[in-house]
Image (cartoon, rainbow, N blue to C red; front, side):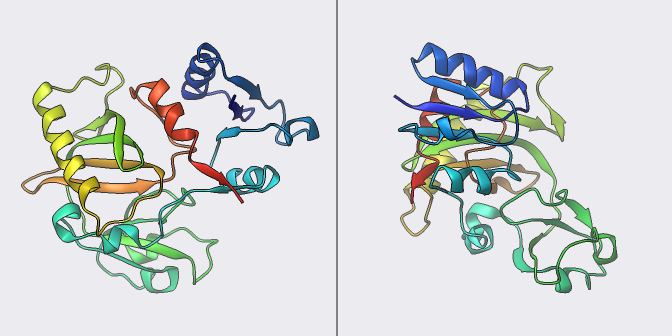
Length: 243
């Protein structure tokens, strides 16, 4: 039986997953400090849900490899799926930008993803730190999709016109659902594109361009919004593998 491992940081999402895991018959361990007790290291099937900064250390102690997309996954994605120019480079080059662009870390939340000019990028990062530089676009709406074995398991809208949709109960229309499923299914069926076994795909609609991929992320630490927590746990179960 899986054991869901949660950090000391209480969030609405972690509490939701805790309750659902208990209902499914899973064991759940909420750490009381940022250190894993030896008694937990012997559990047979640890399932991690944790913050990005702590993830590598925790995974190493459990002898797990966290599944993450390659840093260049988004720039290499065919243009018909991303609908905008994206390149991967390093901080030293990004700091030379004179024109504003959307800049973010490839695989983590090391600094805020937003629009910068080169001289506005935060200090404290090595010149060789990889970054993604993307054309500025206007997203009309964005959805989070939990993916397992190239299959869409559950999804939720999270932004509409840049506004978090919690107060709207994450409502989406049947037409939006149909369009999303058609786009995601086409993407997942494209065998030229690689996906981790368990991952999170964010997609949305760019104004005047249509459906596009926002980004691909590791599944083990992301917010779930209004996604089905049972399906989220199904994906999390395979988001890290034994070394």
